[in-house]
Image: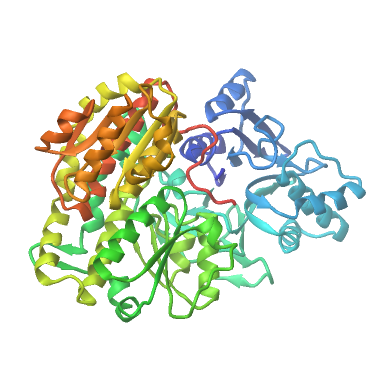
Length: 616
């Protein structure tokens, strides 16, 4: 959450900062701000709302933001309401220090009390203003350099942060530091780029350094990168990597919103996730992180999957997959609950953590807890070099490419794809899946991208359905077996971007409460594939229709019975039940998108949400 951007070099900073903020807006869009430094001072502007409000303010002030050092911030509010005062950058009482910050300082209030007693005053409600003034206090009281004051101050902090700070009298230097919140540096000859996400500087360089927790960097014009440990000031050797992101992947192209683009990218996403892992002619699946730890998975007594949000829904599907194909008991946990409930973890346990960004704070904390207790931790994430990727014992990337839309779509499909591969490999090694079923599933899995592409062609019929129901107040989503988590995901997508209340339930649970809500004003989306409890699904539909409910059914081609019963049907190709979530989720994503679009919502930037939840 929140996006920070910085530049130090020989070019004008303002265009680089403002363009970077636009690319980081998926991380937060409550307010934004920018500071550009010149020899004797700086210009600072802040605005409530999205980045274009900041641009408008700067233009209306006829500001000439000249300078080759700059920092900027786009905010997702934690401490303090979204307004111009709480927006970043924040300045110290003397106006000498200017800082941007992502994260939460948990002990900020205790520090604030000390600073108030020492004559400091505060304009905002943020923890960031407390931190910048703590740095100033320590600097002045001890007559220290800025870099030493930053290091000492950060050793007093409890919480998570990534920061960039500049001193007015030294505009040729930016100091950055990280703990529990992502921060990367773009490196180019005589230029430094700072960002929460390297996609914001890919236009300028593909050389990237991912700061690790507890590291700080001192960036100076015309100087080499100086990387150090915050704890003891130990000098480190920076490891520069090459970004493999294609510029087209972070552009909308012909699509109005990133979300729609990412929905339509799913055939390619699934294919990319399968590439090199599923060898269709040979009917072989191979993931290095599994094969090199085969005995750990084969002998596992229990597997626990830990995730948040959409990744938690993918984890529930993983539970069905793993228990069906491997016969290993599986538990699925919310990371936020897992980390605080003193879970029972043994040295031979397998923990799978799933996160699109690889930076989800609760999931990262759960990972560290599991490792501290001696468990083997396997990670599934999308972002190369992310904190989760660096800290797990083994793992698999999803190869979904950058996902900019806040509501996750293609990352969900990629996570399920990896979980299918994982379950099939382990099941084969444990001799749970016989050769015939294994070969059959390999063949079907290879056909999924084509079947997803076919399902996307149902968009016109989904548009017509959306026109009927875009102004309702409530939706109910029902599914059975492995498609129950898909119902949960469909409801979440609708809530996230259209702000319509929606709930997902196992279809059999309808009679245990939700049926009380059914009337002629309640649309019910029901996943009614022909495999898995089909007769029971028919009964559920009849119960809804008997109470005048409206039924939108996801059905297989050739299904006559549900076609006659439902008010609307969306047809998908036939597929094995165990692989069906990769297909059934597509219409639900399109339905959520189209309803939100008709309602005039900003699909990519829904209110109160941000893409990467890097704070608790």
